[in-house]
Amino acid sequence: MRRLPLLLTTIALCGGLAAFGALDRTGTGVPRPAADTALPAADGSRLPGGRSAPDGSLTRAITADQQRLRQLPADAALWARLGAEYVEQARLTADPAYYPKAEEALHRSLALAPQANADALTGLGALANARHLFDQAREFAEQAVTASPAHWPAYAVLVDARTQLGDDTGATEAVQQLLDRRPGTASFTRAAYDLEQHGRTDEARAALRQALDGAYDPADRAFCQYQIAELDRNSGRADDALTGYRQALRTDPDHTPALAGQARAEAALGRNDDALRDYAAAVARVPLPQYLLELGELQESLGHPEQAQEQYRLLAAEQRLAAANGVVDDLTLGQFQADHGDPAEAVRLLRAEWARRQNVLVADALAWALHRTGADAEALDLARRAQAHGWHNALFRYHLGTIEHALGRTDDARTHLTEALTIDPAFNPLQAPLARSVLATLR
Image (cartoon, rainbow, N blue to C red):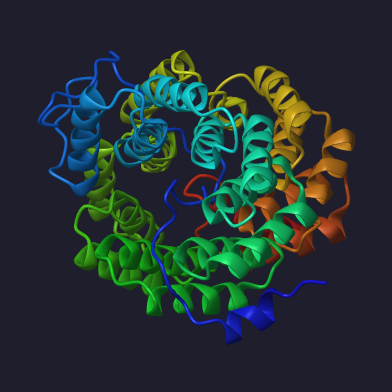
């Protein structure tokens, strides 16, 4: 039985943002690669790759723990904490050069305290999630839960792993277990994502508002405001989304996802100069593949092919460097190849990803890649599987409708293309206009 709605209305919030980062809503984001793997300076002033670091509490915590470990090198708990901090720093800076250091610190903790070391196991699970090694993440999280059933961060890692693996029932159960142990930002934001994936957008919004009501740290509040704005943007309410992203940036000016979201909303509203400016600023801070792809597609839609290709080249370079630091991301590469490269290569990559995890994101991406190679009969089954949970996802509906149109299923195609544009009329700067064009011919 799904107990989430009852809990969302009855549990008082407490606590802060997840210790090991927020759930990736798209499944495609990959942290920023770096040119080298040097440790941060003792004062935390430089990051791997030569980028300046903000003078944040996490940087100071890393510096302090490094200094303590010079005096207490056999402190297993301290090594586990440092490893978790490296994972979080990689998330905040989008620099996977921290991953090998995190792995070394966490394994050292486990070697020093091999029995019931829930902190190290949870950290290794978070690291595996960050590298998109979701099977490993699930195993580490389950080991941590066995070692310490009350250790709530392990359940956050378990939720993320099961979600990405397509274990729908298991993910919902883990969300419930997390809510039972730690009702707070980490649990309510994950509950919201679970509800959104099942088409329960209003309940997801209610969960995020409860999370916001209980969040006091500016970074936590900005994160919740950003997630609410994402719901608005994905529902075609670009004006509301823009207001929400700006609110998040006022709360925390360093919240780069809100800056990229602001650009996304501005593009949907036709404010292209503002969108280009804000995308460029977001990419300069944290050049995630998602941001590079969105900026490239906006440039392409505006008739700037050279600028678009530059973003795509940067995306490919980021992916190669991420892979060098242990990140496996055939989903992002496959999605990119399907629309902007070699569809046959996209099918190869996405079949490999499907063999690792059968969730709705991969089902949709593989369906689209198969369509791009002309294999529409096989694509149709996967596109339907992507709709199985009832997620109100405009891109999924567009892909399904386009595949149905290719197969001559005119009525179904008309229905799903209409739904795509109803959910979000500006879901993609390149593909939304194509949806309108095809729909006009069907009418």
